[in-house]
Length: 188
Image 1 (cartoon, rainbow, N blue to C red):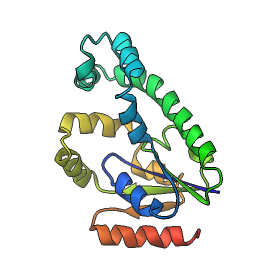
Image 2: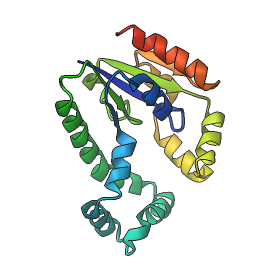
Image 3: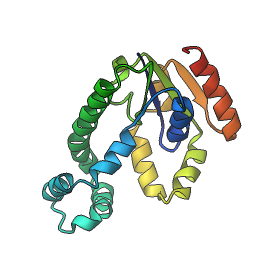
């Protein structure tokens, strides 16, 4: 089994790259997808509402965004709840797919969370900040949230030191695909 971690900065194209890499090669674990699923879970929503004193369960993300922008310490509290749950799902995913040749993991904070030792290969998806902000905003995000999350992440040049491959994603989809396929073919 070859475990491939895909990471990169905010809105660099990790999800697109992960789908290209895993297509017909092996199952894909997405930390972002797990987090999205958590926000649909009643127990999780109740826990978040209690911890952050949120009264309306239907607008948790709106209130969390406000709380995080008011006090950056709130993001750390939120991560202390979310990260262990995501890691548990990641372990379960690995156990359920132990017979597969390739396993792919899209994890935005792979380096910051010091998870490198869990993977045989780590691929970093890179794009200029200006382009990433444009992508973030085109998906409904705002500049304040982008800056908060982006500043929380380690700088690209530091993260790259922990990665086996770097793929620049600033052109078009066909160039991204060509570069990713060249990498995965080294391991097939």
